[in-house]
Length: 345
Ligand SMILES: [Mn+2]
Image 1 (cartoon, rainbow, N blue to C red):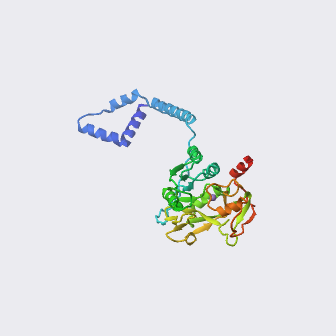
Image 2: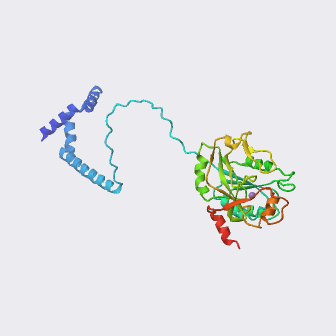
Image 3: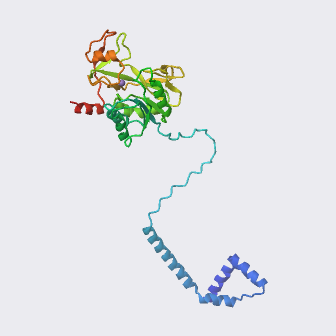
């Protein structure tokens, strides 16, 4: 046994370089390490015990590992090592993936004067698609301002007051000044000019996101449907009586310089003198319904077509300039209007 131990010691001493160096340094420093002391030291801790301890340690470690694996989440299986393909960097000059752009916004602009009848319907419709609603009140004496203020907590509304002097469309009131003021206030990417007595077809809400992101057209026109006498009859253009149920420029890209011309009424939008059809445009097939003349004798007070209205109301007229031509309404009214008709007596 002693002999075997001595052999082991000698062997380890031979192979263990560290120990060898230590031994050398000790010898240099005059410290003599005898074989006897070493064997005694080893005798104190016999090889069997070391082996046993090692064996026990391995067992304990294994048990620990198992308990750990039970406590921790199962280990993720490592993916197989990558194939040893030589890496060559070749810039492909691929453009960066497009970053998501913020959703373009729509500003609705509308001048009003005594529109208490239409405003609840108009605001309900417009609030469902507009990002901001800019209104100029010309000095309403009815409930219009009250209605607008009530809607302020349901929609992003900014109300301005520009006093109209005299009658609308008369010499001392310029529609284009008011409309251009609204154009200047609009913060949206697109402007929509729609009057308080106009309601868009319900399909507009669904078509709008695409209209706002498209890059081809800067101006969009919509069929403008003119009800006449009742909501089942549409007035159409006739000789000497154009401008009824035609397409109307209702939407255009903001911040381009598109503005109203200087006209007292029925002012038109243009881009630095260019007609809207001269700039990139598109014609939509979604209607804007004009309910101004849809309710018989309940005609709007601030109307400017006196002779038309006299005919409309069955009053005698001094002369007839043109024939009023109509056709039956074949489209579908917006849901908000259907609800209104259902309540009408
Ligand atoms: Mn109108």
